[in-house]
Image 1 (cartoon, rainbow, N blue to C red):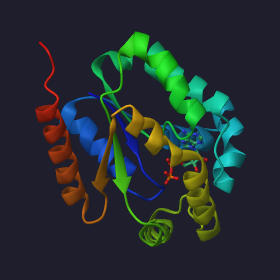
Image 2: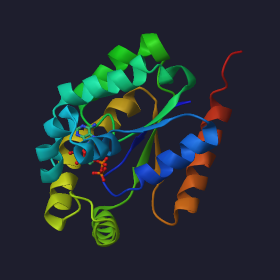
Image 3: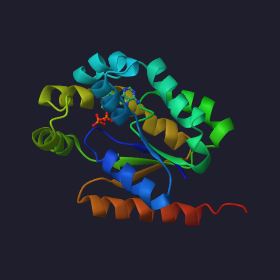
Length: 197
Ligand code: ADP
């Protein structure tokens, strides 16, 4: 399974990526988490990313693409499949993924778009700020991340819809409910588009 999770900040991509990965036996690759741990460890990549992440802005595409290329290709994880969480987030990233991936790993199978409205994600991010204390979970930064999502990432819906890869899943309710909806959507899609064996 080669899957991308799309959806605004706070839509539950990280939670669902971990579940999908465990259930389907593939690695979950979260660009946000990689940046967070590299920032904490003070690596060169972390230093490059830190100011952007703190402001709720996107890390430049070249930095992100290099990191993902290294993770997917050089560690050759991609052969067994993957769940991408938080990547791609811009059109150049999606194009870069298409260019770099297809030869080495095969085409994407599906893009799950987690649908949660703005007021709900702002509430969730505020809750997460109280419990987890992420550097980028202030209200101001959250509002900026939502704006960045609308401007830069939401256009990817069209990109993937045009390629018949986009599946929208209601992201409200408990993590279990959302996971069940995702599995149902994947099963439905597999039933409609049987693979040739
Ligand atoms: P959320 O989806 O809740 O905003 P993430 O953990 O996915 O949280 O991302 C946190 C931050 O990491 C982003 O606001 C951005 O600064 C940076 N980041 C993560 N993935 C990307 C990406 N694909 N392109 C650019 N920046 C990214």
